[in-house]
Length: 233
Image 1: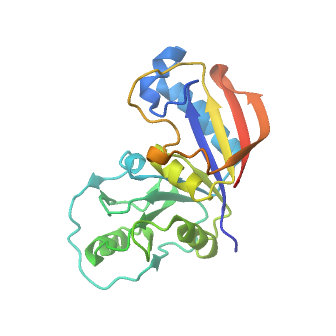
Image 2: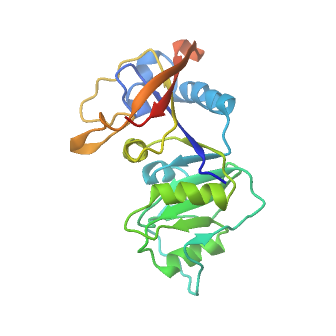
């Protein structure tokens, strides 16, 4: 099975700021109301998996940096805890900092992407919690290989990439994003030193992709939903 079709689905004000709490007030609506518009579009587009980085994962994890009191031999590089699952929440956690006492996020089977140097105790803890994982065989997290494994071993066909800024930037820079889906709300954040929806470090991302317009439509609370196809230059 080929790697999943990746759609980067994000929400922002007119100036592209990532942190919703920093600009939601300008819309006259609550964060919850704005997120509902975004989530409704997520459901409309449709995907069988979503992926976020460690910072977003902390919102769902049970703890950070808490030791797992586990031992034993564990499989590497792949552990599929629930072969019958058909919906997945994928969290990039290179250093294995997040701790999970549950195996799902809002009903989606949890899959953790880790770096090659995580220890067996951490993986054993994930196994005991019923959490699936993919261990990179290179330094850091090999995103391309992880996508291949999600397709071949977990049956993922469409994956929604949902932040943060550096995770989005890494995917885009490596040519792994097929579409961008952006919900722009009528607001201006304007807060200095806050991330944009894509971050590419000092080199930026200007040479990494070409966007071709697909569609635009009015969405809820005065927002506009834009979709672009992504191609490598």
